[in-house]
Length: 290
Length: 327
Image 1: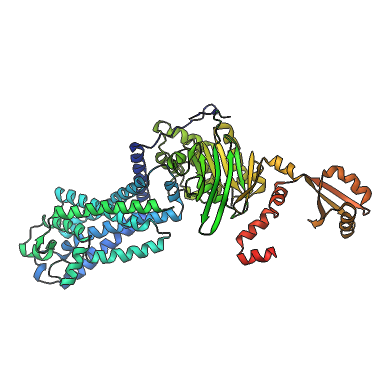
Image 2: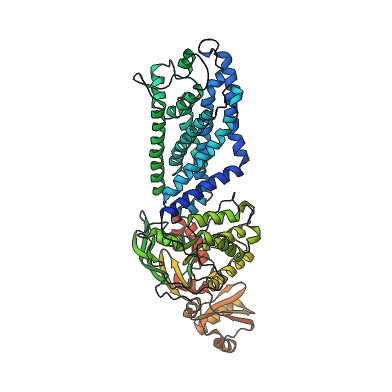
């Protein structure tokens, strides 16, 4: 490349060719921006907390008066709700992070990213990891409330939940990004998001136990991918409670395929696989834009 | 200014169709290294489509384009690494500070870490925003945002800087400030500037301009040569009786005149030499006379048959209006 004469003192930058290191830098800066945006946006942090707190302390308390006796023995209904509420928080936050892509498009910043000499993959991966970290950070606040619903502050439980939260939130962000990739305005994204997320949360075992359900409902919960993200969290919480086996059977029945109790490892594997697949979809969707 | 002989931008038969609409109909031109090259045309003439193809944002339907020696289709990333872009619409993150926006860009373009800080300082100082580096971009005025975008476009020392209507929507003071930066750029950086505009007065700053209309390049040359090519000067006279004067001009000199801005206006070759004849032969008392060299407006009119403002209005109106206007 020919170099021209530049005025003295001018810093002439040579941009190196494409490399893995360059792609990693791109992933890191997209991720970094997600975190900056989250830290700068207090209102968003507070508003995404209102919903789970409502679920846990208003719905949870209200419902617990309904469900007297039976399965409830020895376990506060809010303790049952707790892992579900963590899942809900993480999901909503992750979806919000994904939705910011639509926002970026509306305000033009997406263009700055799309014209850069980096692969679209780096941008999507950075966005999803960023969304994952932000959602996990939001979940940490719910983790801090554990004591209020009789869940012990055990280091192994906290670490397990953190890992599961991160996995779930990256997957959900990837799902959100694949939806958001082609959307032109925020309203339609939120419309679609509500339509997709509400049924998925209802059918995931986040708000009611997956035991003794009618056949059709049981089937729907089994094909709902979110079920496999919520169940490991509930399993982790229940393994740190001292409750009778009957209670565990009723409130933490696990997921069964034709009588086979699906192990937590397999469930997490399903979530991870789906995360990778959705990431692929999101990247493919992005390659097709513009 | 530069040692490289190859053109900074080389375009051959470049076309773009959207369905049946041919937005760009096979344009050809070279941009020399180090020059400021302007694309002048009304809205909808194909300026933005062309610039988008050169920036690898839109895939051409046909033809080829090399930017900084790289093919815009086959070597997309190479092209992107060598160009800076300033769009019509802002593409900044308003929630980040000016400096954070630039850091983001530096990382995304892989600017070597050891020079990032220094380079950011340099480009921010150039556009006089160094003092505001920590302020959120949301607090910036339109002109400041545009300046920041220019700084960002330069951050990775591109070979070619593309500016799509860089001063549209800005007040005259900010516009001239931005032109000040662009002129300074030519002296401090080894760079070629490709810009689009529909402001005639701004096209004057370019080394060469291409007039584009209905997806085709009508003419390419320096503003001076284009104006000289028009050949005629604009003469405006104030008379005691305009109507008689117009009739007399038609009859005695075979010139078509009309009243513009309250003065009888017509175009004639070597206007200054014509003035003495005018005084002796017109037969109508003349109160004042002014002769002006052709402007780019006249050039545009000469090549496209309409003023750029007329053309802007046309492209904004519906097809029915267009048909009516032709009638």
